[in-house]
Image (cartoon, rainbow, N blue to C red; front, side):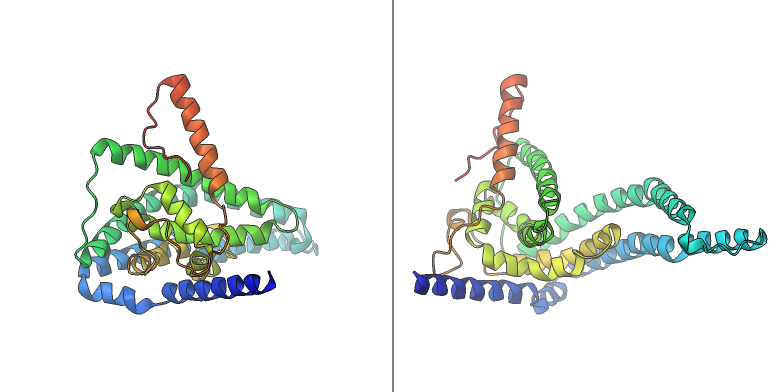
Length: 306
């Protein structure tokens, strides 16, 4: 028993390292840039947009508006002849919170929504061109199927994010479990585009990641390490900027499989499956089936878990 556990742990570690190496093999991304100027230009525009607008807006708040309000408050105290330390005042915390909320609601959140819409279009363009560089052709799908799958994906990924934040709320272990879940989530996002163009059903994509969790945890490590501990909007800006590289590296990795091979394992040893996505997948499908039964809305693109 101990020997088998050691063998599985070694195999999982090797698979994790392979995923990590694939995620930092930037020469593969540079190769795509060299072959396609369109990919290079789209990536450059996307990085500039996110770093300038989102990261710049966050810096304007933290390095501009908040220090300015502190200086103004100190001036008011000085003008009143008060020696009270503004930094110790409840008023400073209240004013800071008010400024942040006003700034986020009136500027940063709306501008992020617009930028994210642009990001999604750019990601699809980059993924499509990267996928076809090697002579691959996307699987043909009917317009109705594409629309239904797109809607399903939006619902599914929103619930996945909610699952991630819910996991992080668990006392003591939540932060660590949320970090681990983020590793697989980052990989899922990166590989989604290529798998979608291959026509791999979402159930097989999730099952493939769950069976090969060590590899995909390794692949997601650089992205999560670069973003997990940052403030929200800074994290979003950094993530959006590096995500094109994730797509390019995922598209050119050995883990990209066809729909017929999506249950195969990357590991040589049968490491136990990690059902990280099953709660969300099962829950979303049950809700959609309930909607279909009670409101007659078609949910024909749903796949049974297998």
